[in-house]
Image (tube, rainbow, N blue to C red; front, side, top):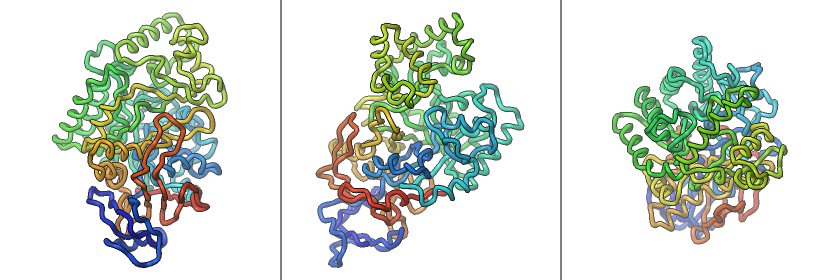
Length: 523
């Protein structure tokens, strides 16, 4: 196929030029400047970019399914062709086989629906030709720990830790892009320093990436004692800085956010910690949202001691008093409240709660917000998905998105029911629109969602418009590029998308090739 007369953006911060691109099969075979008189797709007035790469995703849980196109359609409509998946400690494949705990994989947000996906090569073979878009996948620490030892809070034995490290080593040898930690979630949150060091060292040996969801992103959290005077998000970041410096691992700090107004004054110190780590020889970057909220699970703000307690212990008076005091102090000191937690999906267990904040439910039920929060948890069997607001504001987004160590992502996934995460619809195009509207470097913004991600995760032949690279391409009408905030609507200006040499979206219509155009990207 020939695409001619487009304004071509190579993706690696080079200046754009008017030219043409020829594809053959899955690859770009020719690239040239100037006009082309041959027959082909005339892209005059349009901008051609590499397919966007979402630097932080969980869409590994939705490949290989009969209904996969449903989960990927909103993403291709915002120009995304590839994802880094398996984040926050949770990966959908590659774990200890014949585990009695495999049904716990996904942490309540996701499910492997009873499939045996323990053997990564078999999983890759099964999903081949059943993937709408491309994924690379990290090996999830929580997934490994769950299938080794359940959600127990106790430390692993020396033998179990050795098993985990060997399994992580095996998975990276089979093509996993690295390892991810989810230190705010069970059971990853129970891992001591020795466990994290062991995993970081094996990732370093493979020269791959350790992606980390830190223990805290707010000034006060339930992950640290309230007696700690330093903001908890800085304590959590410092822990990861120390890990990066000590081991030399390539560390990707997941979704740099500042939950609650009281943490917003820690932005500069956070950036300084990462900058100084790199100056001392570490290799540390971060990824970020373009929105002021993020998706999570209803239990994310509960302290570890409460989550690990059996139901009968939670009901005891002393436990209730301790929980009330910790949550009350946290709310007042971090500038985040129950009005900022929106219930989006109850998995059919309590659909009447969806679309309401915890505060609204408390008003409706005439009870204290904490009691309403715990009731939502109980009624949804700890599974409810939520959107959590006050993660950042416009000024913070501007500061972070222009930082040289930033990569762009959505951290979004589609649900079968309930209120959708609006980031599914416009997260990455919003970054480009912000660059245009604020007169900042468009090529730099594009790099942070194309070649920058590909280079970070060693996605060979992706992220650039270059001869020999995969033909993952997007045609944009920048004069029409726009989105609607907090709406389940597709962005405008995404005119055409090609994935692995197949046209998958054209003038608003998905092609028959869409459902099977994707590949598993071995790293």
